Amino acid sequence: MAVKTAQGDEAAAVAAAIARFEAETGAGAAEAPATLSAWQRAALIEGVSAKESVLDAEGGSKWLS
Image (cartoon, rainbow, N blue to C red):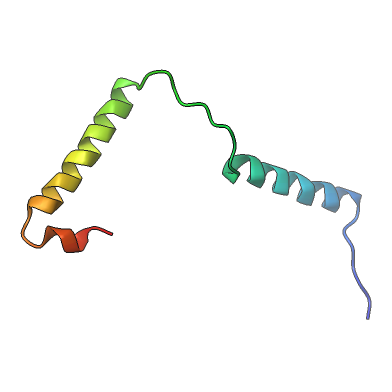
């Protein structure tokens, strides 16, 4: 049985892809923004309001996960 291994360029590409994936998805010490922008604040308010609307509707709680 022959085992195929990655060559130098291929191994470097795999290592770079793994490092990028870890940087984008890994848990880290993320810094919270000092203040919310007007767009972020509006989105949060809209999201909370939408959830309240679903709860107020008849049978709304069944739509929440």
